[in-house]
Amino acid sequence: WVEIALPTGEEEEGDAFLGGGAAAHLALRIATYNVWFSRRNWRARARAVFRLLRGDGDPPFDVVALQEVTPRFLFLLREEAFVRRAYVLSDVLGTTFIGKPETAYGVLLLIKRDLVVGRAAAAAPPPFVLRSLAMHALPSQMARRVAVVVLDATAAAGASGPRCRRIAIATVHLESLGYRRVRVAQLEAIGRILDATDAGTALVCGDFNCAPDSDGDAAPPKEQASARAPA
Figure 1 (cartoon, rainbow, N blue to C red):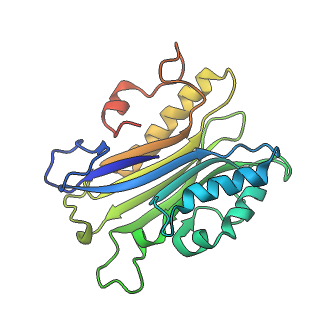
Figure 2: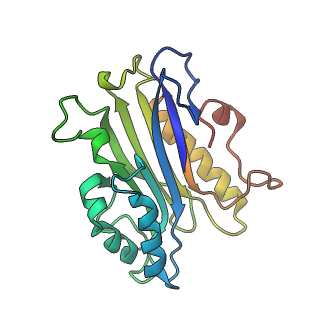
């Protein structure tokens, strides 16, 4: 998991960073996990992931990004009391997963209700407005897609300026195996999708199927990488 700190208007644009904690920033805690589509011990593995996400009572993560989510995992996840109480899901039926029922899988976002709805007993408005939540097709031979949530910080969050107020969070499972050029094309497509949101801060998380130091493998163009929060 990572913690991303959003500028509240007192910093120069592009000053968003991971780790944060300064008074001039609004922090979001984001978890990402590839839950593996295999049937091998899938129920025990799912329960272990749920324990991590549940935390000690109040779930600790504001946004959860999952990859290789199968319908059986999703159906088990959505019955968890902490999920029903605390999160909005990008898909509750598995309709965005591509493939035959026994082999279909995809990506999933969980957004904490308190972020966009606010606690029922709280007097203050929620810190964010859920601007959009969408699934986008990518160039792929494996039906890969990217899920993107766009959040606008409200005055309650202390953010000012149109770009400081908006954050986009995406999750993706890039093409597997030796399809380097496809991964590059997918990253370029994601860059265009995020640019279209006009977010001042964007974070892409997921399974990229490549290491940061891999020779000649997929990497975001330098101009995109430098303009966005590191991940």
